[in-house]
Image 1 (cartoon, rainbow, N blue to C red):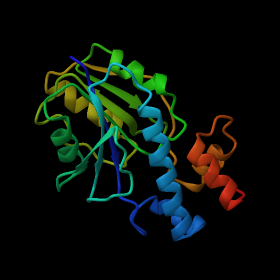
Image 2 (tube, one colour; image 1 turned 90 degrees about the vertical axis):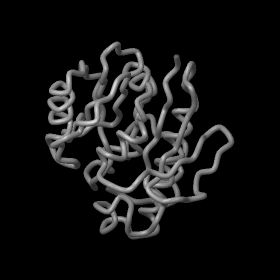
Image 3 (cartoon, rainbow, N blue to C red; image 1 turned 120 degrees about the horizontal axis):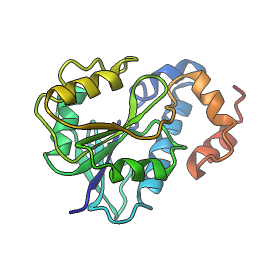
Image 4 (cartoon, helix red, strand yellow; image 1 turned 60 degrees about the vertical axis):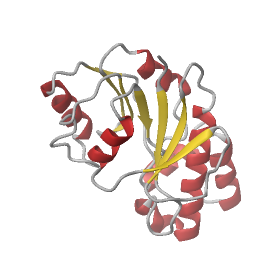
Length: 205
């Protein structure tokens, strides 16, 4: 049995993506940055071997990222927990977010290698960049405060209450705020599309 890899991403709609960066960047540059992040994550995920396939699940239908190797799906309506549970669909799968363009692919491989029912990739802000599930439970995301500093901890607690084993993988950082963008700018290993975005915009942070 091989795992499915699912990238969760919002469609590149002005005013709907990377909103905490929009004041600093402007609308057009913000959408372009989001687009670069998604393309870089797809490039990264497509290097994974021994997986069932790569899926891109967007909040609304979009033709923005049509690639022959990627299956496009639209998320169901509802909260993030409901949408993730539906995407996991009781199969072995790993959901990855689109906000960590410098995430090493080895971090995803570490989550997939875990024998726990649920393996989480922690972010420094208290959330997580990915969740790999060998087993799921209908109540595993109950009570999780999304986009809060306790999202990771609450997910772990809720999964354990459901009888699922839980493990943490290696940590990384998301890019959501101007200070995160400054950190990204000095990263010595920018992926292709994100690097081109910085070159095109010539911004200082």
